[in-house]
Image 1 (cartoon, rainbow, N blue to C red):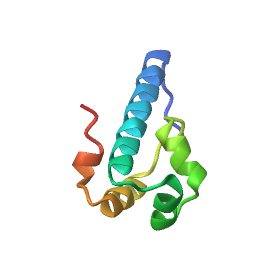
Image 2 (tube, rainbow, N blue to C red):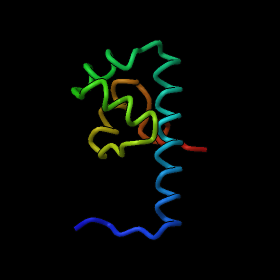
Image 3 (cartoon, helix red, strand yellow):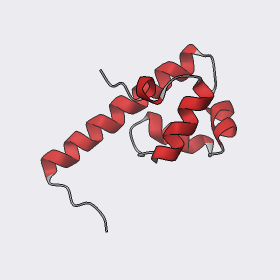
Amino acid sequence: MALQLNPSEQQDKMQVQKKFGKRLAEIRNKKNITQEKFAFEIGVDRTYISYIERGERNPSLYVLWKMAKHLKVSLSELTDLG
């Protein structure tokens, strides 16, 4: 069953996704890893990484774990949205 969000919650969700996308791109870029290489390393399509970094997709916990592992950061560091 899909979670029903009111307009305020929907806006919060979008903000969190955008903040996470910015955080992911920041860490990935600091490590000089392209979206294409990163996507290949974690087994997803490059466009999926692009969608995440633009705040348009919400990765699963397993994908988050794989991202953190391949970026060599903790899951908490990856998801630290300040």
